[in-house]
Image (cartoon, rainbow, N blue to C red; front, side, top):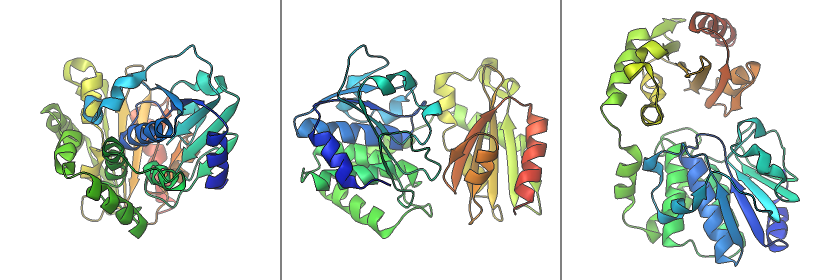
Length: 318
């Protein structure tokens, strides 16, 4: 892992930056990207964002999100990718060559080190923690807006600080953010807001749930037949974010798996672990990745085939 000093040097030596993150960005992706962009602008740099247009409205918590665009024709001095461990899932992958320097800032253990400079720390809870470190390194105070984006990053990737990836340093950094803003409860309500479709889908997930190995493995799925009007549109897909946590919370469950069928028939698998079972290893078997406690992959199989394969693969390691 390159030191933060190398990232600082690369930023100091360049002026125009393009910021990218993964497809269908989550809270850590959006939060760390925006906080990083605000830092760069605070030290006099020019910044553009190319962000997947499918970012959900509940994550657009501050005005920096108005600067998002889906494409660019410009040339930059450097491209910074945040919270994306694999360039295969990077939105705007073609823009990696939009500048001569590529910097990757991430916290995924399965990061493929595809940058010229790779600042990767899988011991931290969220990429936003590394962005806080960069604010400190540049001796730039965290602004009121940046504090909101950093809250989004840390709160969402830690399950509101409930997950085992949280450390004392996570709380220290969060305490600083609370000193800057006193409306984080309001922001949290926006982040966690959902409509009744989430409850409908939860009912379908419960209907399809299957338990294995005396309840240690819990799997479920959603197919196109389960979707409202037979289509999983962007709004409804947003309602499925973190819905796997309902399965993860069942007493005795060590590993939870949720399969979601896309419009094209591909299955998206989400895996969660409550123990030291490393679901990133399982995801890697199917070409995916992530963290030891939270990982995923996409595959062209039917539900029955994939569930049988996962039962075998996970069962061998439980």
